[in-house]
Image (cartoon, rainbow, N blue to C red; front, side):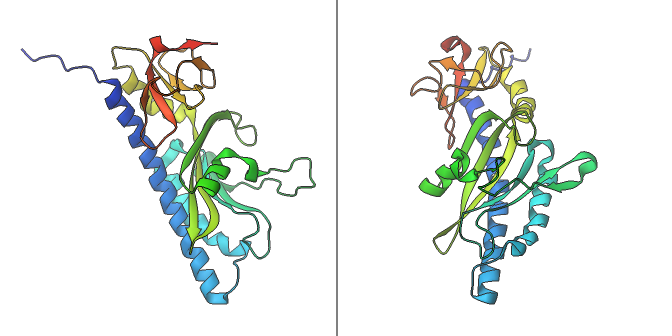
Length: 243
């Protein structure tokens, strides 16, 4: 007779979340390295600040990453630090895969005088990597600018010769993470909820806790098993109460 396998521990499932995050950050490191390479080539050639047109060379590595990760990313690219380009005060080279797997470049309004101005310099996913120089994830939040679905934005700082160039980032739909993580979470003997540092639900085995809802007790120090390198915790559901 074969013994039944032991159910996974919360700690082992927290490691599964960390592994998924590392997969995401690995893609962003590739995009960030491409930005650094383009930047150093342009500055070395002209000995002046690059122009936005120089960043067109990033299309291929960004789209390559989108094709490799499939539905895990809704979009990815680089968001450039304000004032570092020679011709544009703000700039994004951000791509999405649309129907029939055709790449589409995002072109938000970056004019501060416009009522539709997209001021990314105020976004947590930009501010934390810029100010603290480490990778970050913001969310879940509803991406009203693009898809109207819950996403988490992962970002890493990109530098060259000590200068902050911007971030390499990706929007990861919560639904895509659910497809990967929930089957694993459901093998646990306890219902589980993954929360951010504010105690807001990212995903849970209980449909009564939808993404974005707030919980008491989860996300605080000691409220669950922390996820390596992320401001997230994986908690047993009995430790939480929705409100």
